[in-house]
Amino acid sequence: MSTETTPAPPQTPPAPALGRKGSFLPNLLSNFANFAITLVIGLWFTPYLIRNLGTAVYGLVPLATTVIYYMSVLTVTLNTSVGRFLTIALEKNDFVKANRVFNTSFFAGLGIAAVLLIPCILLSVFADKIVQVPPGHETEARHLFAYVAAAFLLNAVITPFGVSTFARNRFDLRNLVTIVQNVSRPAFVVVLFALIEPRLWHIGFGTLGAAVLFAIGSVINWKILTPVLRISFRNLHWDTFKSISNTSTWVIVGQLGFILLTGVELIVVNRMLGAESAGRYAAVLQWSMLIRSMGAIIVSLFAPTIISYYAKKNIDGLVDYARHAIKLIGLLMALPIGLVCGFSGPLLYTWLGKDFADLAPLMILMVAPLCFNLAGSPLAPIYLAADKVRTPALMNVLLGVLTLVAAILLAGPAGWGIYGVAAAPVIAITVRSLLFIPIYASSTIHRSSGPFIRQILTVGLVTAIVTLVAWFCASQLNPYGWLQLGFLAVTAAALYAPLTYFLFLNAVERELLAAKFPPPLRKYLPLVKK
Image (cartoon, rainbow, N blue to C red; front, side, top):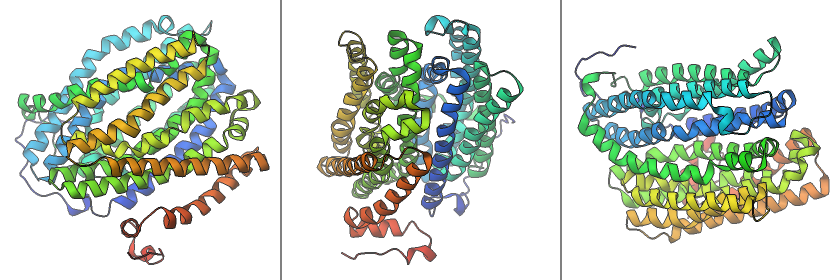
Protein backbone atom coordinates (compact mmCIF):
# COMPACT_ATOMS: atom_id res chain seq x y z
CA MET A 1 0.00 0.00 0.00
CA SER A 2 1.59 3.20 -1.12
CA THR A 3 1.55 6.49 0.70
CA GLU A 4 1.77 8.66 -2.38
CA THR A 5 1.84 12.41 -2.04
CA THR A 6 -0.10 13.30 -5.17
CA PRO A 7 -2.82 15.94 -5.01
CA ALA A 8 -6.39 14.92 -4.35
CA PRO A 9 -8.07 13.31 -7.38
CA PRO A 10 -10.36 15.36 -9.61
CA GLN A 11 -13.95 15.64 -8.51
CA THR A 12 -15.41 13.02 -10.80
CA PRO A 13 -18.75 11.62 -9.70
CA PRO A 14 -18.57 8.02 -8.49
CA ALA A 15 -20.06 5.19 -10.46
CA PRO A 16 -23.82 4.98 -10.06
CA ALA A 17 -23.64 1.43 -8.79
CA LEU A 18 -21.90 2.65 -5.69
CA GLY A 19 -24.73 4.91 -4.59
CA ARG A 20 -27.61 4.23 -2.23
CA LYS A 21 -30.28 3.34 -4.74
CA GLY A 22 -31.26 -0.30 -4.55
CA SER A 23 -28.85 -1.07 -1.71
CA PHE A 24 -31.43 -1.72 1.01
CA LEU A 25 -32.45 -5.27 0.06
CA PRO A 26 -28.90 -6.58 -0.57
CA ASN A 27 -27.84 -4.97 2.71
CA LEU A 28 -30.76 -6.50 4.58
CA LEU A 29 -30.29 -9.99 3.09
CA SER A 30 -26.56 -9.92 3.74
CA ASN A 31 -27.23 -8.84 7.32
CA PHE A 32 -29.53 -11.78 7.84
CA ALA A 33 -26.98 -14.11 6.25
CA ASN A 34 -24.30 -12.69 8.54
CA PHE A 35 -26.55 -13.11 11.55
CA ALA A 36 -27.53 -16.67 10.61
CA ILE A 37 -23.88 -17.69 10.27
CA THR A 38 -22.98 -15.92 13.51
CA LEU A 39 -25.89 -17.64 15.24
CA VAL A 40 -24.86 -21.10 14.05
CA ILE A 41 -21.25 -20.49 15.03
CA GLY A 42 -22.28 -19.12 18.42
CA LEU A 43 -24.59 -22.05 19.13
CA TRP A 44 -21.81 -24.50 18.40
CA PHE A 45 -18.62 -22.66 19.41
CA THR A 46 -19.48 -21.70 23.00
CA PRO A 47 -20.33 -25.25 24.20
CA TYR A 48 -17.37 -26.52 22.15
CA LEU A 49 -15.00 -24.28 24.09
CA ILE A 50 -16.62 -25.11 27.42
CA ARG A 51 -16.26 -28.84 26.75
CA ASN A 52 -12.58 -28.49 25.81
CA LEU A 53 -11.49 -25.84 28.32
CA GLY A 54 -13.99 -25.90 31.19
CA THR A 55 -16.42 -23.19 32.32
CA ALA A 56 -13.95 -21.17 34.42
CA VAL A 57 -11.24 -21.07 31.73
CA TYR A 58 -13.78 -20.32 29.00
CA GLY A 59 -14.89 -17.27 30.98
CA LEU A 60 -11.52 -15.65 30.28
CA VAL A 61 -12.23 -15.54 26.53
CA PRO A 62 -15.09 -13.00 26.52
CA LEU A 63 -13.42 -11.28 29.47
CA ALA A 64 -10.25 -10.63 27.44
CA THR A 65 -12.33 -9.28 24.58
CA THR A 66 -14.20 -7.00 26.97
CA VAL A 67 -11.07 -5.58 28.59
CA ILE A 68 -9.50 -4.86 25.19
CA TYR A 69 -12.80 -3.32 24.07
CA TYR A 70 -12.30 -0.60 26.67
CA MET A 71 -9.30 0.66 24.72
CA SER A 72 -11.15 0.51 21.40
CA VAL A 73 -13.25 3.51 22.45
CA LEU A 74 -10.76 5.91 20.87
CA THR A 75 -10.74 4.23 17.47
CA VAL A 76 -14.43 3.36 17.30
CA THR A 77 -15.59 6.84 18.25
CA LEU A 78 -13.08 8.54 15.98
CA ASN A 79 -14.41 6.59 13.02
CA THR A 80 -18.03 7.12 14.05
CA SER A 81 -17.39 10.82 13.62
CA VAL A 82 -15.46 10.17 10.42
CA GLY A 83 -18.47 8.31 9.04
CA ARG A 84 -20.58 11.41 9.53
CA PHE A 85 -18.13 13.78 7.87
CA LEU A 86 -17.23 11.41 5.03
CA THR A 87 -20.87 10.62 4.23
CA ILE A 88 -21.78 14.31 4.04
CA ALA A 89 -18.71 15.08 1.89
CA LEU A 90 -19.46 12.29 -0.58
CA GLU A 91 -23.15 13.24 -0.61
CA LYS A 92 -22.08 16.69 -1.81
CA ASN A 93 -19.48 15.24 -4.24
CA ASP A 94 -16.79 17.15 -2.36
CA PHE A 95 -13.99 14.63 -2.93
CA VAL A 96 -11.23 16.98 -1.84
CA LYS A 97 -12.79 17.20 1.61
CA ALA A 98 -13.53 13.46 1.57
CA ASN A 99 -9.82 12.73 1.04
CA ARG A 100 -8.89 15.06 3.85
CA VAL A 101 -11.36 13.37 6.20
CA PHE A 102 -10.20 9.87 5.28
CA ASN A 103 -6.47 10.57 5.51
CA THR A 104 -6.83 12.51 8.73
CA SER A 105 -8.66 9.57 10.31
CA PHE A 106 -6.16 7.05 8.91
CA PHE A 107 -3.09 8.79 10.29
CA ALA A 108 -4.90 9.54 13.53
CA GLY A 109 -5.64 5.81 13.81
CA LEU A 110 -1.95 5.05 13.36
CA GLY A 111 -1.13 7.51 16.12
CA ILE A 112 -3.73 6.05 18.47
CA ALA A 113 -2.44 2.52 17.83
CA ALA A 114 1.09 3.67 18.66
CA VAL A 115 -0.07 5.30 21.90
CA LEU A 116 -2.07 2.22 22.95
CA LEU A 117 0.75 -0.21 22.20
CA ILE A 118 2.31 0.25 25.65
CA PRO A 119 -0.91 -0.31 27.66
CA CYS A 120 -1.62 -3.35 25.48
CA ILE A 121 1.79 -4.79 26.36
CA LEU A 122 1.30 -4.06 30.06
CA LEU A 123 -2.18 -5.58 29.99
CA SER A 124 -0.84 -8.76 28.40
CA VAL A 125 2.07 -9.08 30.85
CA PHE A 126 -0.06 -8.54 33.95
CA ALA A 127 -3.30 -10.16 32.74
CA ASP A 128 -3.37 -12.66 35.60
CA LYS A 129 -3.07 -9.80 38.10
CA ILE A 130 -5.95 -7.81 36.61
CA VAL A 131 -8.55 -10.59 36.48
CA GLN A 132 -9.00 -13.83 38.40
CA VAL A 133 -7.41 -16.69 36.43
CA PRO A 134 -7.90 -20.40 37.28
CA PRO A 135 -4.69 -21.81 38.81
CA GLY A 136 -2.23 -23.20 36.25
CA HIS A 137 -3.50 -21.04 33.36
CA GLU A 138 -1.66 -17.80 34.11
CA THR A 139 0.78 -18.03 31.16
CA GLU A 140 -1.96 -19.01 28.73
CA ALA A 141 -4.08 -16.07 29.93
CA ARG A 142 -1.21 -13.68 29.18
CA HIS A 143 -0.83 -15.15 25.70
CA LEU A 144 -4.58 -14.84 25.11
CA PHE A 145 -4.58 -11.18 26.06
CA ALA A 146 -1.49 -10.55 23.88
CA TYR A 147 -3.09 -12.03 20.74
CA VAL A 148 -6.39 -10.25 21.33
CA ALA A 149 -4.52 -6.97 21.90
CA ALA A 150 -2.61 -7.45 18.64
CA ALA A 151 -5.90 -8.00 16.81
CA PHE A 152 -7.26 -4.82 18.37
CA LEU A 153 -4.26 -2.74 17.28
CA LEU A 154 -4.63 -4.04 13.73
CA ASN A 155 -8.31 -3.09 13.74
CA ALA A 156 -7.41 0.36 15.07
CA VAL A 157 -5.29 0.98 11.97
CA ILE A 158 -7.68 -0.61 9.48
CA THR A 159 -10.99 0.77 10.78
CA PRO A 160 -10.94 3.97 8.63
CA PHE A 161 -11.05 1.79 5.51
CA GLY A 162 -14.39 0.35 6.67
CA VAL A 163 -15.97 3.80 6.66
CA SER A 164 -16.33 3.52 2.87
CA THR A 165 -19.01 0.83 3.19
CA PHE A 166 -20.90 3.11 5.59
CA ALA A 167 -20.62 6.17 3.37
CA ARG A 168 -21.67 4.24 0.25
CA ASN A 169 -24.37 2.29 2.12
CA ARG A 170 -22.86 -1.01 0.94
CA PHE A 171 -23.17 -3.08 4.07
CA ASP A 172 -23.54 -6.18 1.94
CA LEU A 173 -19.83 -5.96 1.06
CA ARG A 174 -18.88 -5.25 4.65
CA ASN A 175 -20.97 -8.21 5.78
CA LEU A 176 -19.14 -10.46 3.31
CA VAL A 177 -15.84 -9.53 4.94
CA THR A 178 -17.37 -9.93 8.40
CA ILE A 179 -18.64 -13.41 7.50
CA VAL A 180 -15.12 -14.42 6.46
CA GLN A 181 -13.84 -13.14 9.79
CA ASN A 182 -16.54 -14.90 11.81
CA VAL A 183 -15.99 -18.23 10.06
CA SER A 184 -12.20 -18.13 10.07
CA ARG A 185 -11.87 -17.45 13.80
CA PRO A 186 -13.37 -20.76 15.00
CA ALA A 187 -11.81 -22.54 12.02
CA PHE A 188 -8.31 -21.56 13.21
CA VAL A 189 -9.18 -22.71 16.73
CA VAL A 190 -10.60 -26.06 15.64
CA VAL A 191 -7.50 -26.82 13.56
CA LEU A 192 -5.19 -25.95 16.46
CA PHE A 193 -7.29 -27.99 18.91
CA ALA A 194 -7.05 -30.97 16.54
CA LEU A 195 -3.30 -30.69 16.03
CA ILE A 196 -2.27 -29.76 19.58
CA GLU A 197 -3.77 -30.25 23.03
CA PRO A 198 -6.43 -27.50 23.43
CA ARG A 199 -4.97 -24.38 24.97
CA LEU A 200 -6.38 -20.98 25.82
CA TRP A 201 -3.90 -19.16 23.56
CA HIS A 202 -5.29 -20.97 20.51
CA ILE A 203 -8.40 -18.79 20.75
CA GLY A 204 -6.28 -15.65 20.79
CA PHE A 205 -4.36 -16.84 17.75
CA GLY A 206 -7.64 -17.49 15.93
CA THR A 207 -8.82 -13.99 16.81
CA LEU A 208 -5.65 -12.45 15.36
CA GLY A 209 -5.77 -14.58 12.21
CA ALA A 210 -9.39 -13.60 11.59
CA ALA A 211 -8.48 -9.94 12.13
CA VAL A 212 -5.82 -10.17 9.42
CA LEU A 213 -8.37 -11.55 6.93
CA PHE A 214 -10.84 -8.82 7.90
CA ALA A 215 -8.18 -6.17 7.31
CA ILE A 216 -7.44 -7.48 3.82
CA GLY A 217 -11.14 -7.53 2.93
CA SER A 218 -11.68 -4.00 4.29
CA VAL A 219 -8.90 -2.60 2.12
CA ILE A 220 -10.35 -4.33 -0.95
CA ASN A 221 -13.81 -2.84 -0.25
CA TRP A 222 -12.23 0.59 0.22
CA LYS A 223 -10.53 0.39 -3.17
CA ILE A 224 -13.72 -0.76 -4.92
CA LEU A 225 -16.22 1.62 -3.31
CA THR A 226 -14.20 4.79 -3.02
CA PRO A 227 -11.54 4.89 -5.76
CA VAL A 228 -11.52 8.67 -5.32
CA LEU A 229 -9.88 8.20 -1.90
CA ARG A 230 -6.12 7.75 -1.77
CA ILE A 231 -3.64 7.53 1.07
CA SER A 232 -1.61 10.71 1.06
CA PHE A 233 0.18 12.42 3.92
CA ARG A 234 -0.46 15.75 2.18
CA ASN A 235 -4.18 15.28 2.83
CA LEU A 236 -3.62 15.21 6.59
CA HIS A 237 -5.13 18.54 7.67
CA TRP A 238 -5.08 19.98 11.16
CA ASP A 239 -8.36 21.88 10.68
CA THR A 240 -10.07 18.67 9.57
CA PHE A 241 -8.65 16.86 12.59
CA LYS A 242 -10.00 19.57 14.89
CA SER A 243 -13.45 19.32 13.29
CA ILE A 244 -13.48 15.56 13.68
CA SER A 245 -12.00 15.60 17.18
CA ASN A 246 -14.51 18.19 18.40
CA THR A 247 -17.23 15.67 17.66
CA SER A 248 -15.09 12.68 18.66
CA THR A 249 -14.21 14.09 22.09
CA TRP A 250 -17.79 13.97 23.28
CA VAL A 251 -18.47 10.72 21.45
CA ILE A 252 -15.51 9.24 23.33
CA VAL A 253 -16.91 10.49 26.64
CA GLY A 254 -20.28 8.99 25.72
CA GLN A 255 -18.70 5.67 24.81
CA LEU A 256 -16.81 5.56 28.10
CA GLY A 257 -20.13 6.02 29.84
CA PHE A 258 -21.73 3.36 27.66
CA ILE A 259 -18.93 0.94 28.57
CA LEU A 260 -19.83 1.45 32.22
CA LEU A 261 -23.41 0.69 31.21
CA THR A 262 -22.76 -2.49 29.24
CA GLY A 263 -19.13 -3.53 29.51
CA VAL A 264 -18.29 -3.98 33.18
CA GLU A 265 -20.55 -6.94 33.89
CA LEU A 266 -17.94 -9.65 33.35
CA ILE A 267 -15.29 -7.71 35.27
CA VAL A 268 -17.60 -7.27 38.28
CA VAL A 269 -18.66 -10.94 38.24
CA ASN A 270 -15.09 -12.15 37.84
CA ARG A 271 -13.67 -9.98 40.64
CA MET A 272 -16.57 -10.35 43.10
CA LEU A 273 -17.96 -13.83 42.43
CA GLY A 274 -15.02 -15.74 40.93
CA ALA A 275 -13.94 -17.27 37.61
CA GLU A 276 -16.55 -20.07 37.66
CA SER A 277 -19.48 -17.64 38.07
CA ALA A 278 -17.95 -15.41 35.40
CA GLY A 279 -17.83 -18.35 33.00
CA ARG A 280 -21.50 -19.18 33.56
CA TYR A 281 -22.48 -15.54 33.25
CA ALA A 282 -20.41 -15.11 30.08
CA ALA A 283 -22.06 -18.12 28.44
CA VAL A 284 -25.59 -16.79 28.98
CA LEU A 285 -24.48 -13.30 27.98
CA GLN A 286 -23.70 -14.61 24.49
CA TRP A 287 -27.39 -14.48 23.54
CA SER A 288 -27.73 -10.87 24.62
CA MET A 289 -24.59 -9.96 22.68
CA LEU A 290 -25.76 -11.91 19.65
CA ILE A 291 -29.12 -10.18 19.51
CA ARG A 292 -27.52 -6.81 20.21
CA SER A 293 -25.09 -7.41 17.33
CA MET A 294 -27.90 -8.38 15.00
CA GLY A 295 -29.83 -5.27 15.95
CA ALA A 296 -26.78 -3.05 15.49
CA ILE A 297 -26.24 -4.43 11.99
CA ILE A 298 -29.84 -3.73 11.03
CA VAL A 299 -29.75 -0.28 12.62
CA SER A 300 -26.64 0.54 10.59
CA LEU A 301 -28.70 0.11 7.42
CA PHE A 302 -30.74 3.17 8.33
CA ALA A 303 -28.03 5.45 9.76
CA PRO A 304 -26.56 6.68 6.44
CA THR A 305 -30.00 7.66 5.14
CA ILE A 306 -30.83 9.54 8.34
CA ILE A 307 -27.56 11.47 8.07
CA SER A 308 -28.29 12.10 4.41
CA TYR A 309 -31.72 13.56 5.23
CA TYR A 310 -30.11 15.86 7.77
CA ALA A 311 -27.38 16.90 5.32
CA LYS A 312 -30.11 17.91 2.86
CA LYS A 313 -32.01 19.77 5.64
CA ASN A 314 -35.09 17.61 4.99
CA ILE A 315 -36.24 17.41 8.61
CA ASP A 316 -39.80 16.29 7.85
CA GLY A 317 -38.46 13.45 5.72
CA LEU A 318 -36.00 12.58 8.47
CA VAL A 319 -38.75 12.36 11.09
CA ASP A 320 -40.93 10.15 8.90
CA TYR A 321 -38.00 7.92 8.01
CA ALA A 322 -36.90 7.62 11.67
CA ARG A 323 -40.44 6.64 12.77
CA HIS A 324 -40.57 3.93 10.11
CA ALA A 325 -37.06 2.78 11.06
CA ILE A 326 -38.04 2.41 14.73
CA LYS A 327 -41.07 0.32 13.86
CA LEU A 328 -39.39 -1.87 11.24
CA ILE A 329 -36.29 -2.53 13.37
CA GLY A 330 -38.37 -3.10 16.49
CA LEU A 331 -40.77 -5.53 14.81
CA LEU A 332 -37.90 -7.41 13.20
CA MET A 333 -36.16 -7.80 16.57
CA ALA A 334 -39.31 -8.57 18.57
CA LEU A 335 -39.44 -12.10 17.17
CA PRO A 336 -35.93 -13.30 18.14
CA ILE A 337 -36.07 -11.47 21.48
CA GLY A 338 -39.47 -12.95 22.32
CA LEU A 339 -38.48 -16.46 21.24
CA VAL A 340 -35.22 -16.44 23.23
CA CYS A 341 -37.06 -15.23 26.34
CA GLY A 342 -40.03 -17.58 25.98
CA PHE A 343 -37.87 -20.63 25.23
CA SER A 344 -35.05 -19.66 27.62
CA GLY A 345 -35.25 -22.80 29.80
CA PRO A 346 -35.34 -25.41 27.00
CA LEU A 347 -32.84 -23.36 25.00
CA LEU A 348 -30.20 -23.32 27.74
CA TYR A 349 -30.80 -27.02 28.52
CA THR A 350 -30.38 -27.99 24.87
CA TRP A 351 -27.47 -25.65 24.22
CA LEU A 352 -25.26 -26.04 27.31
CA GLY A 353 -26.82 -28.86 29.31
CA LYS A 354 -28.85 -29.20 32.49
CA ASP A 355 -26.21 -27.41 34.61
CA PHE A 356 -27.11 -24.13 32.89
CA ALA A 357 -30.90 -24.53 32.65
CA ASP A 358 -31.42 -22.83 36.01
CA LEU A 359 -30.07 -19.57 34.49
CA ALA A 360 -33.21 -19.08 32.35
CA PRO A 361 -34.38 -16.09 34.47
CA LEU A 362 -30.95 -14.50 33.98
CA MET A 363 -31.28 -14.87 30.21
CA ILE A 364 -34.71 -13.22 30.25
CA LEU A 365 -33.37 -10.37 32.37
CA MET A 366 -30.52 -9.81 29.92
CA VAL A 367 -32.46 -10.15 26.66
CA ALA A 368 -36.01 -8.79 27.17
CA PRO A 369 -35.10 -5.07 27.58
CA LEU A 370 -33.23 -5.13 24.27
CA CYS A 371 -36.56 -4.52 22.52
CA PHE A 372 -36.51 -0.92 23.82
CA ASN A 373 -32.76 -0.47 23.35
CA LEU A 374 -32.68 -1.61 19.73
CA ALA A 375 -35.94 0.06 18.71
CA GLY A 376 -34.66 3.44 19.89
CA SER A 377 -31.23 3.05 18.27
CA PRO A 378 -32.12 4.70 14.91
CA LEU A 379 -32.59 8.00 16.75
CA ALA A 380 -28.95 8.27 17.83
CA PRO A 381 -27.70 9.22 14.33
CA ILE A 382 -29.99 12.27 14.48
CA TYR A 383 -28.02 14.05 17.19
CA LEU A 384 -24.76 12.71 15.74
CA ALA A 385 -25.64 14.29 12.37
CA ALA A 386 -26.60 17.50 14.16
CA ASP A 387 -23.27 17.38 16.06
CA LYS A 388 -25.17 17.56 19.37
CA VAL A 389 -23.36 14.82 21.25
CA ARG A 390 -22.25 16.50 24.49
CA THR A 391 -25.48 16.01 26.46
CA PRO A 392 -25.89 12.31 25.49
CA ALA A 393 -22.23 11.78 26.43
CA LEU A 394 -22.71 13.27 29.89
CA MET A 395 -25.91 11.28 30.37
CA ASN A 396 -24.07 8.06 29.46
CA VAL A 397 -21.37 8.83 32.02
CA LEU A 398 -23.92 9.57 34.74
CA LEU A 399 -25.91 6.41 34.05
CA GLY A 400 -22.70 4.41 33.70
CA VAL A 401 -21.37 5.45 37.10
CA LEU A 402 -24.74 4.73 38.73
CA THR A 403 -24.84 1.35 36.98
CA LEU A 404 -21.38 0.35 38.20
CA VAL A 405 -22.18 1.33 41.79
CA ALA A 406 -25.56 -0.43 41.64
CA ALA A 407 -24.03 -3.61 40.18
CA ILE A 408 -21.47 -3.80 42.99
CA LEU A 409 -24.05 -3.12 45.69
CA LEU A 410 -26.65 -5.52 44.30
CA ALA A 411 -24.13 -8.31 43.68
CA GLY A 412 -22.48 -7.95 47.08
CA PRO A 413 -24.30 -6.34 50.03
CA ALA A 414 -27.78 -6.95 48.63
CA GLY A 415 -26.95 -10.60 47.95
CA TRP A 416 -28.42 -10.76 44.44
CA GLY A 417 -25.25 -12.24 42.97
CA ILE A 418 -25.11 -12.43 39.18
CA TYR A 419 -28.74 -11.27 38.93
CA GLY A 420 -27.79 -8.01 40.61
CA VAL A 421 -24.99 -7.46 38.11
CA ALA A 422 -27.42 -8.03 35.23
CA ALA A 423 -30.24 -5.92 36.69
CA ALA A 424 -28.21 -2.72 37.08
CA PRO A 425 -27.46 -2.08 33.36
CA VAL A 426 -30.92 -3.30 32.33
CA ILE A 427 -32.63 -0.56 34.34
CA ALA A 428 -30.28 2.17 33.14
CA ILE A 429 -30.38 1.19 29.46
CA THR A 430 -34.19 0.96 29.49
CA VAL A 431 -34.49 4.49 30.90
CA ARG A 432 -31.95 5.75 28.38
CA SER A 433 -33.58 4.08 25.36
CA LEU A 434 -37.22 4.65 26.24
CA LEU A 435 -37.04 8.22 27.50
CA PHE A 436 -33.78 10.10 27.10
CA ILE A 437 -32.83 9.25 23.49
CA PRO A 438 -36.29 9.95 21.96
CA ILE A 439 -36.70 13.20 23.89
CA TYR A 440 -33.19 14.49 23.17
CA ALA A 441 -33.09 13.41 19.51
CA SER A 442 -36.43 15.09 18.82
CA SER A 443 -35.32 18.27 20.61
CA THR A 444 -32.28 18.62 18.34
CA ILE A 445 -34.54 18.86 15.30
CA HIS A 446 -37.31 20.78 17.12
CA ARG A 447 -39.94 18.07 16.82
CA SER A 448 -42.16 16.22 19.29
CA SER A 449 -40.84 13.02 20.89
CA GLY A 450 -44.32 11.54 21.27
CA PRO A 451 -44.42 9.67 17.93
CA PHE A 452 -41.02 8.12 18.61
CA ILE A 453 -41.91 6.97 22.13
CA ARG A 454 -45.22 5.50 20.96
CA GLN A 455 -43.42 3.48 18.31
CA ILE A 456 -40.96 2.11 20.88
CA LEU A 457 -43.78 1.19 23.28
CA THR A 458 -45.57 -0.61 20.44
CA VAL A 459 -42.43 -2.67 19.89
CA GLY A 460 -42.35 -3.53 23.60
CA LEU A 461 -45.97 -4.70 23.45
CA VAL A 462 -45.31 -6.94 20.46
CA THR A 463 -42.22 -8.40 22.12
CA ALA A 464 -44.21 -9.17 25.29
CA ILE A 465 -46.88 -10.96 23.23
CA VAL A 466 -44.29 -13.08 21.42
CA THR A 467 -42.60 -13.92 24.73
CA LEU A 468 -45.84 -15.02 26.39
CA VAL A 469 -46.89 -17.15 23.42
CA ALA A 470 -43.45 -18.79 23.29
CA TRP A 471 -43.47 -19.41 27.05
CA PHE A 472 -46.92 -21.02 26.84
CA CYS A 473 -45.80 -23.29 23.99
CA ALA A 474 -42.66 -24.25 25.91
CA SER A 475 -44.65 -25.09 29.04
CA GLN A 476 -47.07 -27.27 27.08
CA LEU A 477 -44.76 -28.95 24.57
CA ASN A 478 -41.42 -29.21 26.45
CA PRO A 479 -39.30 -28.66 23.30
CA TYR A 480 -35.98 -30.03 24.53
CA GLY A 481 -33.84 -30.51 21.44
CA TRP A 482 -32.72 -28.50 18.44
CA LEU A 483 -35.23 -30.08 16.09
CA GLN A 484 -38.19 -29.21 18.31
CA LEU A 485 -36.92 -25.71 19.04
CA GLY A 486 -36.13 -25.11 15.37
CA PHE A 487 -39.56 -26.32 14.26
CA LEU A 488 -41.31 -24.05 16.74
CA ALA A 489 -39.13 -21.07 15.77
CA VAL A 490 -39.85 -21.54 12.05
CA THR A 491 -43.56 -21.98 12.74
CA ALA A 492 -43.58 -18.84 14.87
CA ALA A 493 -41.82 -16.86 12.14
CA ALA A 494 -44.28 -18.11 9.51
CA LEU A 495 -47.20 -16.91 11.64
CA TYR A 496 -45.54 -13.75 12.90
CA ALA A 497 -44.63 -12.29 9.51
CA PRO A 498 -48.15 -11.99 8.02
CA LEU A 499 -49.75 -11.01 11.33
CA THR A 500 -47.22 -8.24 11.86
CA TYR A 501 -47.48 -7.13 8.25
CA PHE A 502 -51.24 -6.62 8.42
CA LEU A 503 -51.73 -5.63 12.05
CA PHE A 504 -48.81 -3.35 12.79
CA LEU A 505 -47.73 -1.88 9.45
CA ASN A 506 -49.86 0.87 7.95
CA ALA A 507 -50.47 1.35 4.24
CA VAL A 508 -47.56 3.75 3.79
CA GLU A 509 -45.15 1.38 5.54
CA ARG A 510 -46.33 -1.55 3.44
CA GLU A 511 -45.68 0.49 0.31
CA LEU A 512 -42.23 1.47 1.58
CA LEU A 513 -41.42 -2.12 2.47
CA ALA A 514 -42.62 -3.38 -0.91
CA ALA A 515 -40.41 -0.85 -2.67
CA LYS A 516 -37.35 -2.56 -1.14
CA PHE A 517 -38.12 -5.82 -2.97
CA PRO A 518 -37.20 -6.58 -6.60
CA PRO A 519 -40.11 -5.98 -9.04
CA PRO A 520 -40.67 -9.71 -9.73
CA LEU A 521 -41.37 -10.29 -6.02
CA ARG A 522 -43.10 -7.00 -5.32
CA LYS A 523 -46.32 -7.97 -7.07
CA TYR A 524 -46.84 -10.87 -4.65
CA LEU A 525 -46.93 -8.60 -1.59
CA PRO A 526 -50.51 -7.74 -0.59
CA LEU A 527 -50.80 -3.99 -0.23
CA VAL A 528 -53.64 -2.19 1.49
CA LYS A 529 -54.28 1.28 0.12
CA LYS A 530 -55.04 4.20 2.41
